[in-house]
Amino acid sequence: MKTPDLGLPAGVEVHVDDTPDQVALALADAAAEVLASRLEQAERASLVVSGGSTPLPFFKALAQKSLAWSRVDVLLADERWVPEDHPDSNTRLVKASLLQGPAAAARYLSLKQPGDTPAEGLAAASAAVADLELPLDVVILGMGNDGHTASLFPDAPELAHALSAACPDRVAPASPPSQSQRRITLTRPVLQGARFTALHLKGQDKLDTLQRALAEPDNLAAMPIRAFLTPGLSLFWSP
Ligand SMILES: O=C1O[C@H](COP(=O)(O)O)[C@@H](O)[C@H](O)[C@H]1O
Image (cartoon, rainbow, N blue to C red; front, top):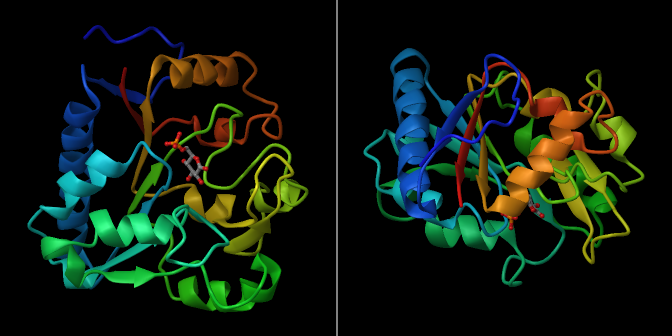
């Protein structure tokens, strides 16, 4: 398939394939390569993944990779504040599709902690990710058609704090009125600057959203994904 001309900044790599499964395999190859190389140099490696519907084939492909999974820390970029057995729980998805086979040996760091609200669970969620070494090794982002990534939603009252390049916190609550569930998210300084960052998208609608984001790159609050459309990013897309 021909690579669409998106007007991405120089230094953004674009990988386009005909099908979501092909893209998932390519992304799994790329992520596994970075993790393997990191595990040769460091005791542990980190892998941040996104929830939603797009990553499922990627999770299945990555789970099959032969890696020293017991030395990999896996966590979500964001989580909905729902119990793990809820259909919308991203943790449930990750455990059922990524942390399987060889990858079941990975250490999962949960953003969802006890408490009725993300604010109540915030200290525990912060503690869960406190020991992670920054920069992270692999961060796989998704994007919604409102321009959110992770749970950095344009309409979240907590956005300015979580999207600040100087945010001192690793995790932040998010309560966007557009969403039916409250959420918790990694903040911009944690998500940014990883050794490998990919934006994994499926569908023409996501490409159209990306083009809108690129058209006015400076207004980060209107489309938080803009903060991550920087050199070094790899875009993985299929129709
Ligand atoms: O709500 C979310 O949506 C985005 C994109 O989801 P998708 O279903 O369109 O793939 C995801 O990246 C984010 O982590 C999640 O919380």
